[in-house]
Image 1 (cartoon, rainbow, N blue to C red):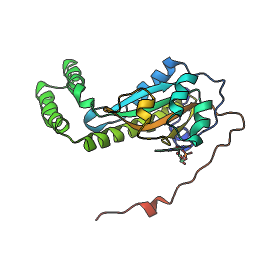
Image 2: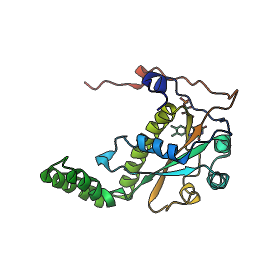
Image 3: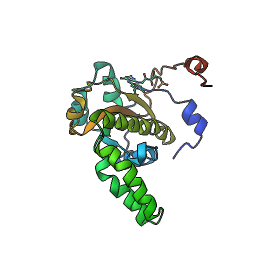
Image 4: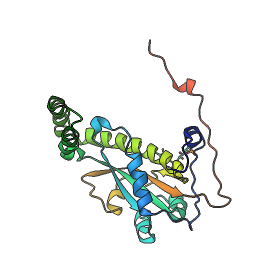
Length: 212
Ligand SMILES: Cc1cc2nc3c(=O)[nH]c(=O)nc-3n(C[C@H](O)[C@H](O)[C@H](O)COP(=O)(O)O)c2cc1C
C-alpha cells in the first residue's frame, strides 16, 4: 500500500469522476485491492459479494448499455471499474468456508456444528427478499472498503449505482437469477484539472436519536 495514513484515506476521500485515461491499473493490482476489500465483515460471514472487472473498451461498452448517461465520463475515463454484485446463492458454499476454518484448527467441531446448524437453515429457508437484502448489505460493506483500499493504493474512486437495476446484471454477463446489483466503483488517477466536487455533510446531531 502506498498510503497507510487512515485519517488521510478516510477524511480526504472524495468522489472523482474525471480520470486520466492514460493510467493503467494491472489486473493483479485490481485483484489485490478486491482481496483487501473482502476483509469487510458480512452477515454470518457469508461474503455474499461478487466482482466484475471492467477495464477494456468492449467491456465498458457493455456496462454503458445499462448505465445512465451522466455516468459515462467515469466509465470512459477510469482505468478500471469494479462492479459489485450481491450473491443470493452464497449460502450454497457456506459449508466450505467454515470447514476450512475447522480444518485449519481454528474452531472446534462443536463450534463448526453450532455455526452450520444455526445459520444454514436460516438461509436455506430464506425468502428472495431476505437474500437480496443480505447480499446488498454485504456488497455495500465491501464497496466502502474498496473505496478506502483504492486510496491506500494511490488511486481515487467514484461509487455509483446510476444504472438500470433490471438490466445491468445481464449486461455485464452475470446470471440475474442469482446476482443482484449493488454498485459500480470507477478507479483511477484524477485527470489534470479534474473538477472534484467537495461535498459537505449534515450536522449528524440532526440525524441521531438517543434511545433511553
Ligand atoms: C449508493 C451510491 C450511489 C451513487 N450513485 C452515483 C451515480 O450514479 N453517479 C455519480 O456520479 N455518483 C454517484 N454516487 C456518489 C455520490 O454522489 C457521492 O458519494 C456523494 O455525493 C458524496 O460525495 P463524496 O463521495 O465526494 O464524498 C453514489 C454514491 C453511492 C453511495
